[in-house]
Image (tube, rainbow, N blue to C red; front, side, top):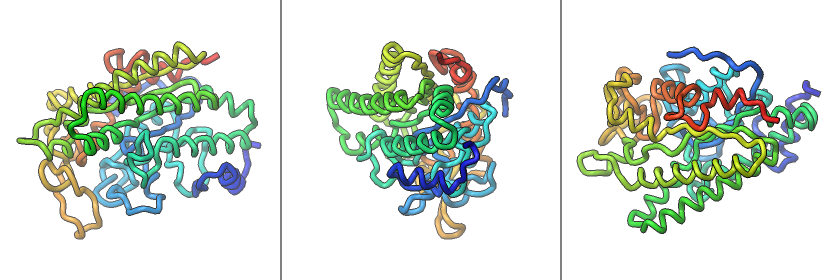
Length: 366
């Protein structure tokens, strides 16, 4: 059963009603057993799914994205690897490819459904793969797994897997752009909508067998180079960051409630907001020379227009990306991503709680 051909897998995904996927600084002790990694989210975790959408090509499809590690653009919004790429290494897994990448895939290792620009709500960006659509793809993949293995083995695999999320930031940036003068009650209502929809998605994953959930929370949205470019003297924009803080408090509360109400549900939250704040406030402590201006781009703080065919698009590019916290207007360098992944994987309670990802991976779920 495990040797089911790729062509039959594609037919099963089509049957599910989905688009056919053209289907360290630190060395950590590897997990004792095979644990798959399923990834959902936005551009911080997208390894190139958007390259396979019938839309305008992403800037990440062009040089200089990917140059540091891959020596070519892969669709990742960085000069190299993203957080999930490092996490897969720590879990003793191969690098998890985009779900939509053509060719056969080892779903027993996991899959990456993340899409640059995605939100929890479809209306945040209709041109990309929103969280509800990512969940639909995931359900189709579960059907494939059940035919590759059998129901019992697939259920065991889904139960021991880790589900890693980075989602929500685009929803809040979209809300801020559309509602600059929103009242506090309107902000709280919107956060409630986002958390409510996230909770529904998590319960669906739980219903399919998922038990171990990990979140990278919303970041310091107002201090991105793209946010600074629109403020006086390049100061951080407070309102987007305030929305992120509201979200992060509500997310922590919602996950705690789910752990109390759903038998076997366990979670970890990496405080991405705090990690970026620390590196923004004191970049040299973490080995960075620049935490305001991006390595690649044009305009104030190189906040936009990174990436393009050589000679056809004008932008500035730094000499050493690792000196910078940000590679472009909203995404970290590989060096930053490595640091973040280490905190997510093995950090203490002040970084990742109520347990870190390594502890979550090793949990035995009865």
